[in-house]
Image (cartoon, rainbow, N blue to C red; front, side):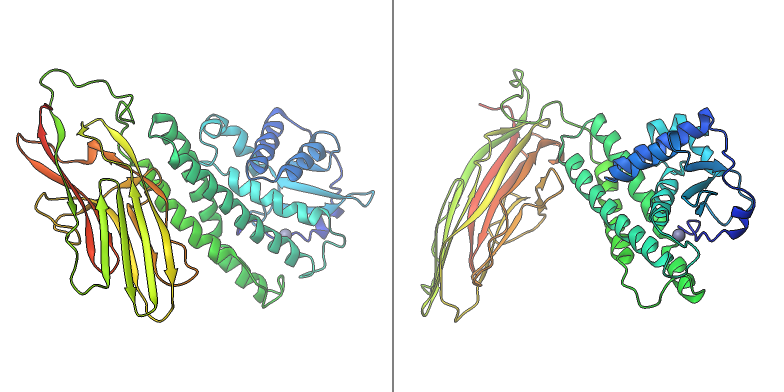
Length: 419
Ligand SMILES: [Zn+2]
């Protein structure tokens, strides 16, 4: 952003800007990539306009500029219409076309800088008296600030969709491209803060304006983390559901369920009670005139889990009854792998299950009025994340439910050849 500066180019208009600069295959390519990039960030109208202004109207040109300070500016031609001049440094887009075609926002690509520059300059294209500062720059910078916020949101949506896909080489490529764009946009914001401060100091921008770029920056940092985590996600198992997994070969070992224990011993005191079963737990609590009942449900875990299995389990909580506001109470529903001796409500070596987007197998619920329970969420029993089995080794999957007291169901699995 540092280079998306002001324009104010009286000198240049004296030099006779209107002399049309030749369009070359390189400049054509450059403009096409910028337009495609604008389009990719949802700025379709600006993209269309750029193509029209460059290819048909001769209102956008690439030229060598003396100053290294500016990427582009808008000025008026002889007939008094606004025209945009982009420095021919932008031709590096055409020069690195091979890379950009594959990884548009790779760190070796400047495409995002030019996309943002052109977007900014198009605010100026609709302004008259381009030399009026800051009346002139405030709207352009504000529009750029808002565009960054929108583009960040688009990347957020794209990333969530990409990460929700099953792990594959294609998904990795997709996440990589989004990560490139996240990092590129973040680096544009690296100097935005300074540019705004300097702009105010130098009388180019009005003081006291509201900006969203700091929020965008925080969001982009967060997205970068998520994307990086998504990139390093482990390679796909051959199959992703129980139904499509081939049968075990004779003698082949797996994690085999050897017991299901439902914890239905009731706590003393009478305020709490529950009924738990495989896939279902009804939790009840009352105190004075307050009553709070909820039901947790989960898909019954499979009998056999092999290393290559990835079995979806959907967890949800439904509030059955909730009256009174005299007391507070909170609850939770957790699926967790742990050692076989563990009881509900206790963790020794717990390991949560994860969803396609990294969601954890934890849902919270509260007696507080008007607050819906969390979820539902779909997480996976992922055989590749389970320990390497040795004969007779056991692990436990716990459905932990809590309403002030703990209960649940424990599934013990043993590494062996299924019966
Ligand atoms: Zn400007």
